[in-house]
Length: 569
Image (cartoon, rainbow, N blue to C red; front, side):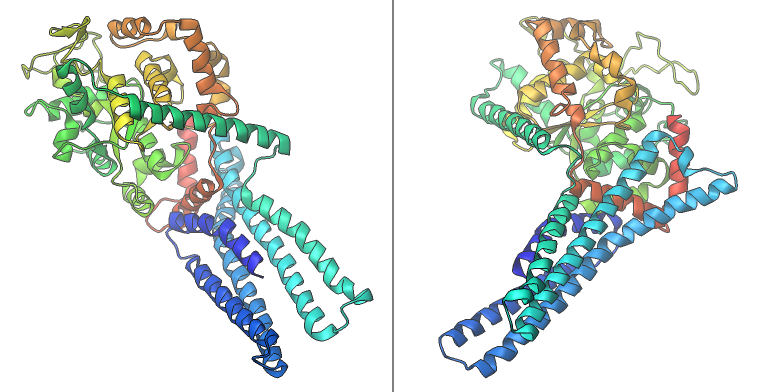
């Protein structure tokens, strides 16, 4: 009995709690701790009574009713535990299944059909249903087998009396069934992929080895790191490193875009890039103070928890959605992107329940002082995609520092902020063991053609930083596989040609760098693109989908599907 309860508690409790927190509904998970406490109390009481009986302290007439009562209590507690576990998984599963059924019924009327949804969205919904279904089946199997085993033990101990010969089958058969069912139950709850045992062991060993290497590299960096020998260079690196922006503040800024009276009232999330937002919202908003927007918005210097690597040519809404997905623990930003456009309040509620609304990020658009670099010119003649008007230039008059602007150290500008990203990442990694990198991959995978993005990814790996890629959908990888396999650092681009030259000059062997880059990103077992959500993360994601469909404040899942179909087709 104790083994059964301990196994189910350890395997199930964290997963069910994550599901309950993501849904924002009481699934009764808190009752499990109470039931487990009663089990422990029952076992201790029976143990004390048995020791007392075996030493002759209490007679058999007292020991027998204690033993009988303990067995009855064990059966009742097991039934209660099973009921709570089944309810916790069954409620969100039934919610999502009804959602899918509702879409199929609408198809009869010629409306949106679940079956006609784009593959990424279908797969997301299907995976959530399958994950929850596996939990329900696993708990049900465990329930039947354990109850049968406990009941047969009760009969064998108290009613049969004859514990030999044919009556032994009363115990042996249920026990054998319980072992088989328990193994199946554990496999279903584990969330293990459909691979052979040798494949799982091989992948696990490879991942463990790489994680050990990462931790070793991080430890070596923390011991060996020294500030830059030029005091002014080192001071600028430290200054850059204290410019984090919280997710809460980022959502406030995003929520103002597109509103009358804002810096960018014509903002369209499906059209405007990060570069558009920097030129038309961030630079004008910071003209008077002539400093980075992160410090202005936060009101003080803030150490970031994450470094965000992204490309300015991609949608600004994609950048924000990926940051939100990181805070939620999602592998893709499909759901986060939808809620950004329809219900930021509901999104804030999810982030608050997750406890990550105050997480801080280093995002170059906000964390770099644009008035010390690009604000005074528009060399490419870039125009707003909605109005067709040229991006404005700023007349703040602040001195500009580019890669070779004096004063220089070994040919590189000391006061330029745009040539110190990798130095700043190394400093933050060396001074903060929990500092991580978030890589925002756009649907077209253009990020992997940007020189600074690749340099940041490689530097983060060398510094032993934990890294995570945020994709619009995992299926996008297959669509761009042919182009991605030919990735070369020599072919990368940057908005400023001198950046490409600087990065290429810093790499001694381009071919060896390309080989390592491919392994780091595309290795099928341990590369960044191979990352998959653990069982607890899948439960959280399923819980968010179920909560969104049944929330009175959030739009229906049908609207979510319609939005994703429009964006992804």
